[in-house]
Length: 332
Image (cartoon, rainbow, N blue to C red; front, side):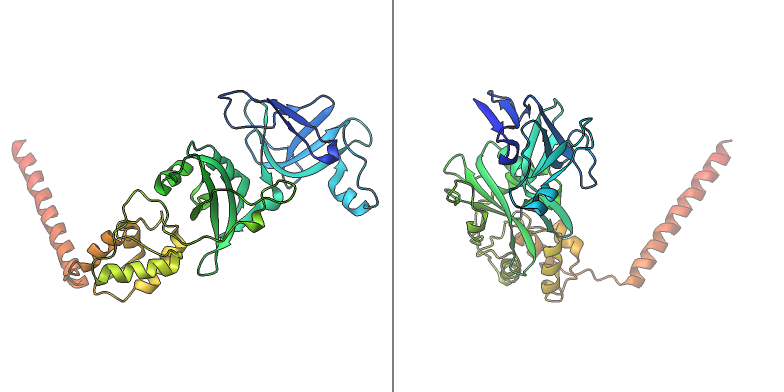
């Protein structure tokens, strides 16, 4: 089995890879004869191994340009600064790629699939590649959808290998080994099939909006058992856009992140006798744990009492130090 890669502008075939069992992530291989391939950054410089960039192609298969479209030809077909041949050009594929350590090329998606979420520029293809590396995932597509508050969030659409969907907590932990936190999808939506365009490509625009159902978690669903748990669960449901929240569900496994945690804090702050901080919400990421903390009696000591306690501890420590010094002098 051979994997051939190349756009029409380079006469269809530009790189090739023989696919073998156990070879690791599928790559597009190496350039065929009389073809050059470069991974280039936004400044037009070639990038080191492992660094993402745009794939540029050149060589004997390069087209002359687009018929009757001079502006588009000038944009996509650019001079080749690394060729000694006068007039040599390169085609900007618009594909995001990187060189693997063994010299093969890995294609990770399109430049037009790059998005900006919470201030971070993200290549969706890199997330999709990490998902596809998981044994429980047959196919994966990642897009951006607004959350209930109108902010952008990453949504991963998955086709699992078996009828049982993967556990979200386990999937998130596996992704954290390959991706930074800001690239972990907030929602994992399981589908039976992906919508396709008439020419057979995945139709990203036709992917359904997240259904808001409780994801497949490692904890069983338990309904809120008292007024405190009910209050917390309702706020989580509104902010996360989830139809049901169990008392043992982890806030982050439900699609939460630090910014949403701040919004939850704003809605819960002042509702309970016990003071609630953002740090407390990180410490108690389930409804059960947070409710248990909030039901505890607030500390009675005032700031003055705390200061007196610290002064008394320092006084006792100083006394012990003097006693030890006097004991050493007596021994001498």
